[in-house]
Structures are given as structure tokens and as C-alpha cells.
Length: 316
Image (cartoon, rainbow, N blue to C red; front, side, top):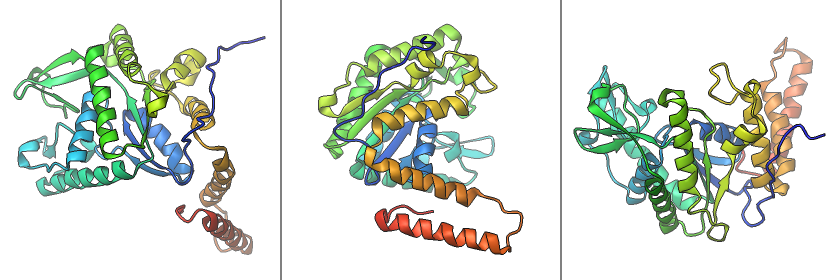
């Protein structure tokens, strides 16, 4: 008896992720979950240098500026609530010091430029089609930073606008790195603040816009994070307490599907070794000075050294 509908997956045959891969992750908070899993298993990752970005225009803007190595100046930041902010970055980049925020922004530009040149894979997670236009400059922002709502116009990006933005992201990435594999996904996080109907409209626009440009032949792929949550995990026991975000069980389930589809078979043994070491490092002994614990630490160090002989890039 089948009690669940399942989405079929096949292993990526041409360019799966392995321990030689350089994976760049951009986008909404769900990309943080996938990025955290990859980082836990010690894959080489570079994640959201400008913080979480929710809509495609914000991600396109970051990619464009990074490729062109544009410089942020005082004109690109503003002061509010005792902190300096940038409309093109998440509030985690904000700072009480003007020089420090500009240093962080420009450092992120340089790092992103370098990473995009060297990346084997870019994973882009889109969260919403809703965006806010700053009336004063008539530009769409990545984050409002608690600037009064009356200074913005809220609008939903059309399917054509999203498709154009997705295409621009692909063309920009291919211009700096022609062999890069691009993987799009839609965040399963529900944006209740926009409204339930509005959230569904938003996800529909994202899905329709993305799928106009999916082409395995051109190394542009789609991973169904949203569909896994909606179709296989359609139960509130898979949500966090806010009933909007996937809980740990759901994240682990989606990660297992991602691992099956996108992580190479050859990497699985190393992943097991990494997980074993990570558990050992997280172990909390009753007595730090006991002979038993010292022996445990010695054995753990031997495991690390053995793994690093095959994978010198892995660091604990």
C-alpha cells in the first residue's frame, strides 16, 4: 500500500558535486539549509556573501555587480536606527560604523567575483516574487531595513520579469565561467505576511519563470525543494513551530533527496568518514583529563589525518 506520492529522482550523470567541486549558494533562507549541510560534510562552499536574498532581481543585481567588480561608496548606504545599511544587502551586513559596512560590501564583491570564476556549481534559491520599490529612487530593493513602509511600493514580479531575470543570471554566470553548472530551486518556506493566496501566486510566478530556462544541455537544472515539501511532506508535522518553515526532519528529508540526485557516489564514503569525525568532535566527555578521553582524542586525530591524506582541502 502506497501512503505517499513520490517525486522520481535520477543521479546527475555529467557533473555531480564531489570533494573537488566549488559550490556557491545564493538566495533565500532555504539555501542556508542546503549550504549548512554541504559545509557540515566539508564540501567547499561559498554562501550568501550579501546575506539572504529573497527575490531574483536582488540576486541578479549581486551577480552583475560582482562580475563587473563594482565599488560601493557612501552614496550606496544610509543611516537608520543607529546603523548603516545598504538596500542591496541583508541586515546582517549592516554596521554601526560607516567604514566597516563599506569594507564588508566591497570585500564581498571581490570574494564573489573570485568565487564565481572558480565555481563548479551555483545553487540559486528563489523565495518570493514579491518585491519592494523604493519610491525615492524608483529601484527595487533587496531588503527594506525597517525603513517606513510608506516609502515603498509593493509589487509582484511578473512571470516574464522573473524569466528575464533568471536568463540574465544564467548569461552573466556563463560569461565569467562558461562551464559552470547552475541549479535553481524554489524555497518551500511560506511567506504568510504576503497573504496565503499571494504566497501561492508568488511561488507560481517563480516556478513558471524558472522553467522557461531549464536546460540540462546547457547545464542549467532545477531541484524540486518546493515540490518535495508540498507533495511528499504535506503534513504540519514537517513544519517548525511557526507552521511556515520546514523543520529539521523536513530539511533532512529534502537533503537526502538532494544528496541522492547531486552528490557523486564516490563522495559517499568520505561523507560517512566526515560525519563520524564531526560526531566525535561534538562529543562532550565527563572527564576531560581521563585516560579514556585522551585515547579517544588520539584516535579521532588519526581518523582526521587519514581522511586529509585523500582530501587535503578538508579542514576541521
